[in-house]
Amino acid sequence: MKLSRYLFAFVSVAALYAFAPSHAEAAEGTAKLSWVNPTTGCTLNDDGTLKGGVCDNVPLVDDDALTELRVYVDTKAITAATAATLTPAKLGPTLTTTNVSKTVRNGDTLYFRMTACNGPDTARVCSELSGQASKLIKLPKVKPGVPTQMGIAITVAKVTNAEFDEMRARADGVMTTGDDARAMLF
Image 1 (cartoon, rainbow, N blue to C red):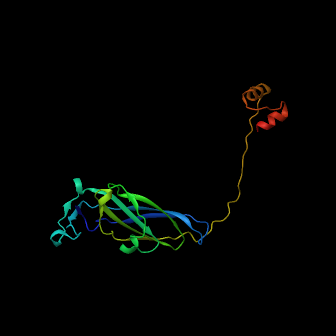
Image 2: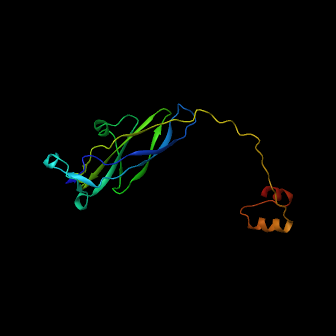
Image 3: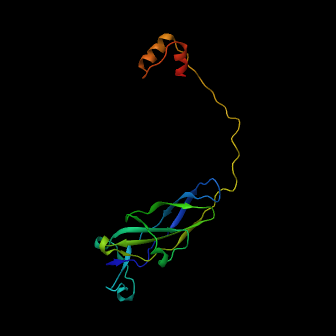
């Protein structure tokens, strides 16, 4: 099985949006990630080492094609050890962008890393972690003022008694007649 020992991907955090009523409260944030998938890999020996000690850049096609991408996100820098404790988002092998949601607080930094995998579920082989991308969360520091000079315009249509009787006949339920019933419609 061949797989790149390194995910040849540039993981970029395009944007992060977080909305919170105050700086201390948590809010749901969404980051848009983009990357370039690897197209070649390295032939491995049975013990997982590089065959011949060097990467031979074999195309990832047929049985060696990518089968899954994994996105890791945390509020702490991600190492191989910490990645093993995280549950990655598992994506299809042809994607090159995704949105990742995470609860954040003002001043948090979100860290992102990825791996590319191939092989069946029972024998999945994954690349090393990609380079790390990060984004500092900064919520607005100014609370907006209260809206003022709010106005409202109400238009009431004038109906004849005949029009009213026709509307009443179509309405569900029991209604009273006369001026009280007309007022109930508005």
